[in-house]
Image 1 (tube, rainbow, N blue to C red):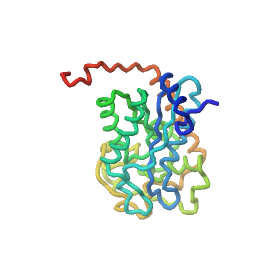
Image 2: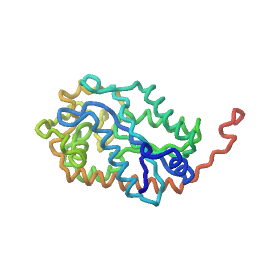
Image 3: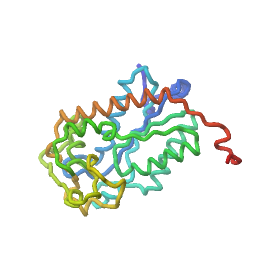
Image 4: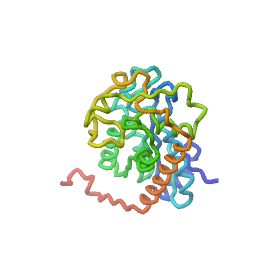
Length: 273
């Protein structure tokens, strides 16, 4: 049986995967509140499910190693709600750099981070650039929602502001993969007026003219911790979104297999211009 989960492999099996130029995929999520109806581990569960399905689907076409999930990220915006655990942005970036640095030390040259928490996004972009510059390892950062964006736009029924956090999309995916953890009787629609009235302060991925980032905390815009409309979630939507994200990740892995990355020795030399 082909093993692709790093935690189930022996060190000789990992060594062989390095020889096979395996691509490492790291599922990254969070431990944070997701309203009254979704568990704290929602982001991590979604990320790991997408990665597992992609690793199985790509089969022998690409050698893939799935690293253990990183389930605590940068979630400071949700800290007013019990159960949320956050790292500082510096600590989170240091953690990810050390995880990827360990993999690079053993010979892995390509890493894909599949992130499912928006609050991690900017930090992970910095991590990717630093790792290429410092370790010579190629790091791609992707998210399930971005990989499946076209499908999300097609299947969503919610108004603008209906997709952001513990929303139509996340709830639909959880109904598809962990329905027993969705408290259906606790579904609440919460679309903050701020994110609808403003021309620029948007967090819905389909919103036009949205800023790349701005400061906010959940308690200021949501009573229950929801930002969106989970009442429109369905298992069928979740499966469609998952399928789209998985197929896009499979295509990315196939593309990265053929990607030749050259790191001239002078590039990292102290005397390099």
